[in-house]
Each structure stands twice: as C-alpha cells, then as structure tokens.
Length: 557
Image (tube, rainbow, N blue to C red; front, top):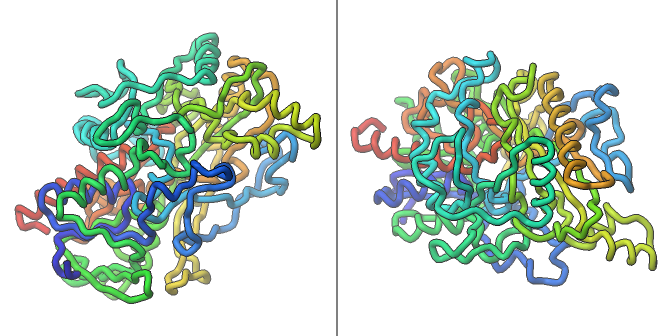
C-alpha cells in the first residue's frame, strides 16, 4: 500500500501497539504499524545452542534505544540495608549515590513482550483511586468494571493460564487455560508462606499450559527473557500482530523510526515522519495516529514534535507530557536451600502472594506490593552464573561445590507501587542526540520517603519468606534503592478528566488533538501494587481502538 492508503498509523508494536493493530484490522480498518526495530524469527534466539547461557536476547546495537540520566540522588547511610550486594563481590554499587542501571526496553515487532516473563495481571481495582483515597498520585478516569470485558478479550488472544477463585479482581469468565503446576522450588515457598499465615497461589501468565491457538505448550526451560523459541509465550508478535496481519488489513514496516509528528491546523496531526533502514525519509498520514512507544519513548516523541502549532511539544498543552514518571520498585533476596530444588526449571514466575497488593495493606504507607518465587528472574539458570555469583574458588573443590549446590538457589522477588513525584520525569537531553539527530530521552528519577519505606517493607518481608522457605544462607540481594533498573515504567502521558492535569481523556485520546491517541503504560495514572502491566496495556489499547472506530463512524475524527 502507498503511504496515503491507511486509516490509522500505529507507532510501536509492543503490548499496546499490537493489541490496537489487531482490534482495528479485524474491523477492516486499514492499519500501518511502524516499529524502529526488526522482525525476529524465534529460531534466532539460540536456546538450543551449547552457549545458551551466554546469550541474551539477540538485540542488535543499531536497534537499541539511547537514553541518558539526570543527576542521581544521594543515598542515606540509614538505608544501608537496602543496598545491592553479592556474597562474593560485595556491594554492587559502592558509591554514595544511586547509579543508573538499565531500562529494559526492546525495539522490534513485539516490543518488550519479546523478553517479558509472561506475567498477565489485572490491576487491583482499589489501586485505581489513589488520589481520592490517599491524596497521592491520580485517579483513573475509568473504573475496573469498564475495563473488565477488555481484559477477557486480551486473555483469550494471548492465552493466559491462571488459577480459579479470584476474589479481589472480579472476573466475568474464567482464565482460558488452567494454571501451571508449581515447581518443586516454589512448593517450598508455598509451604513457608503457609507457616507465616500468607497466601501463595499460582501466577497468571501468558504462557501456555497446554496447546492453544496453534501454539504448543511450555517446555519449562525458564528462559522467557531470552526469547521464546517455541512461541508458547504470548508475546504480541505471535498473538495480536500475527492475527492482525492475517486479516489483510494490517501492514507492518520494520526498521522505521518515527522522528516527529506534524502538528497541523484544526487541532489535528497531519503527518507522521519516519526514516527507514536505508536512511530514506518518509511521510505518511491517516485519520488517526496511535503512539505506543512506551512511557519513555512516547513523551520523547511528543516533546520532539514541537512546531508553531505545538510550541511546547505535541499534546503538552498542560505541561504534563513527560511528567509523573513512575518506575519499577523492586527487591529480591536469593538464598541457598539445603535440598537440590532444581530451581533452574519451570516458568520464570510461577507463583505469587497478593496479600499486600491492596494500597492500604501496609500501615502508614500508601500503595501495595506483591511477592513471588522467581529464581529464573535472577538468571540463576546455568552453571556460569553459579560459578560467578554463588560458588567461590577454583579447581577441584570448586567443581565439587558446584555439583552440590547447583539448582538449590531460591529467589524471592517483591514488586511494589511507584508513586509520581516532581523530581521524577522524562525530558529531552539538551546535548545528546541519536543517529538521526533526534534528542534522546533523559530519565530523571527520584525515590522519596514513601518509596523507600515501601522498599524496606518489601525487603523485610522477602527475607522473612526466604527464611521460612528453608533457605539457610542469603547470598545475594538486589534492589532499586541504589540502582535504577526498570522493566515497567508508567505515567508520562497520563489519562484524566482535567486537561490541566493530564494529557489524555479516558479513552487515551489527546485532550486537544482530535486524531492523536496513546496506547502504552504512559497513560497509567497509577502503577498498581506491583502488577505486571502488559495485560492492562492490551485491554486499554483494545478499548481505545474501539473508540477510534466509533469516532470514525460518527465522523468525529
């Protein structure tokens, strides 16, 4: 198709972009899906090769998004118990300031779902009213009830396996697939939690527990973040986007980096400018534009798209584009269990405790958290990492100790609410530019007293669960107090009812720009109490796509 033959242009092919593309194309809306990265063949992931442990996801350097960091905050000696450390190497961050780690974002068809662990969570409805209940953050402009049907659609498309008996998050239909059985290692955690009076249940994951939709069941290699060769993990490339392309109404263009959106007259986006893999410039337009680049790259694109019609950046009339940045708040503790657990097998996060997920579950601290068994998330899956991080020494004794302890590592991870503050935001770096001359995003991050108090609770409870599970020696702990490390980021173009305090309305539509929509975690008014966001992004994106269709039929785009 020519660049003028599309009804909707979608930028980004992760959870939001993929779900939007499917929802529109199945209604015979002509969609152009642009992504700055390539299309990956699952056979490229290399998990069948002998050097699998030394291979990460096969991302190419030219497709890696660049970003910088603003000044990092000073660390308090009183919070020394929240420092990241390993029993062989000591403190990982030996400085007196927080250090910049990594934002785990991927460019390519499927986006960051290519490397996610498959967790498929619905938000706790109580987490959607943080401002009205606790005076922090912002309320969602829609209710859980309004989103529930779209959660069901997303779960059916990606094939979510989950447990029965959900209470907090109302369900109108059961999970499409039965839950995965707990691994032996996780059964030890379940027993430990029961002794502590905690509830431990199977996790809801977009990983097939039996064949579904032409995809095979999981083989429990636990390497989801290296890419799923079998396609049993519900990344958007093998679910939403595959189905969208099959309709004949979705055209996918890889290696297509959007450099700016044209803010035209009459409050409309009139053009999308992008550069292909051969450095050729293109311009396209459509009735609607959906930006789904993630909570860092989406505000970057908006702020870089300033012109005389949008002097402060596209969609930034409120000054809120890039503000309200919420990052991953996480803690993990790893110990050695006296039994050979085989903890290198299974799915990465097979079980979870939701007992502290509600935003009022910690006395004096607004916002919840959750705990899970996640040794594969700590990348303790093969002998190389055991040799580097678990067993010291060299020679015969080292080999003997390796044989004795391999598979006995046990990791408990906590994920918590992240609340916005004035010092956490995304802007454009005034000096650094990417290869196309576009300013890179600058991440400004700050953890206030409420965040560190929540982290302290998470760390204390994680250690308690690890000990109750039978671990005899703690060998490593990692937290985001002293190292910025984010897989989940939120809030930089949040939805709301007040155009002065938000960027979008309840359907992800710009308050001003009639044909501009967003469909990623940048729209979240709050992060939730540790839930993985991909399923919520997909549900919101499907809802936004249906709204675009409705507006188009009424001639209101």
